[in-house]
Image (cartoon, rainbow, N blue to C red; front, side):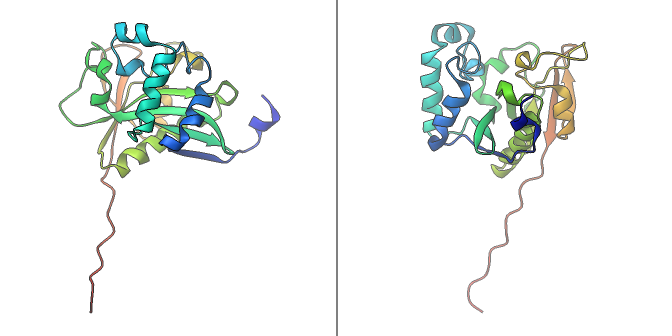
Length: 207
């Protein structure tokens, strides 16, 4: 590990707003995070993804970000983009609906955390945990009451983080999530229930 990753770095997690698109592009790099995905895999059918992976997926994600829809969060360490987390209402990820393992638990409105991407030099340094906590705050601020995740819980003690883009179950548990369903031995569905954000009382005008 390099000296820069050993010392404590200032971490910040913020929404991927239009002006931050260059940082998303920098973080994902030429491969689009992984295999030309550009975090569009959950938003497409298998055939759509195969046709569009690469530059077409990049353009699709760019359009979403620049529309102001905020498809995810960016983690910065000392101002450098080092991590990404995709979070949005579950309905924005149609692949979830077609999954036998990850199909809906019930008919409640939930927000879904579906994907993480961490710069290889910063894996294992707490970026995923910071992103997940940021996702909880992000959902709460938008009035959401349930955040849902689909992490992996490998049988072995260790699994290469590059293959755990769903996040690890242990990370979700540390962030206050609890299991609500499991249709696969290694793929629990976890949730965190939120209290609505309190609004400041309106001040009365006049005396």
